[in-house]
Image 1: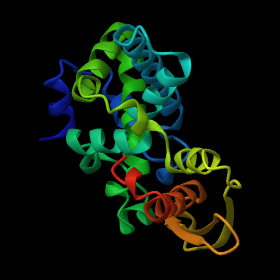
Image 2: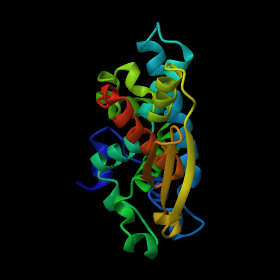
Image 3: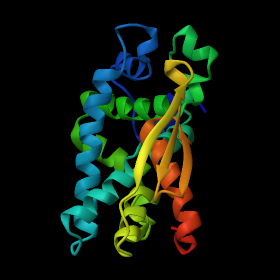
Length: 226
């Protein structure tokens, strides 16, 4: 189903179709791209999800609400929504991105979702944008994860070590390789002088989280399911 038709199932039909076209135009095409709309959509998304969580979780403190919001609006979550909406097939990409699978790249899909929200905001106003956000996030808001699972592997590893009076882990970048748009990082997590764990990821942060998760799997296997 074409993306514009998919949007109509949510009651969205653009008065100014050029806004939707711009929202689907990646920076690899040129200077006239979706980055400004992405900025706008990101702000609207954060506000709507923050309010939804604030209303649903009256007992949660600021820290917990922030972790839930981060979990809901993270790149992976937005990329999954982008795939569900079929956004990839409609993206306008430069030749390099087309050749390297840009239509399927999570970061590009996530940015495009935010840009589309920004375009809807300009075209239809905040109330309609809020309704759309709540509709596409309905399942995620209805099935929030357990609070403990929101702590990332680095945080859980640090807390596990602190609880046992051990030194904090040390992370060291071993190497990064690949083209700028497909960079790969390898990081070592050193828990003590004898135990090192390797992690890989598309960013240094993701590689560190991967290394921490490997450390937890070995040192604290009871946390694996988290």
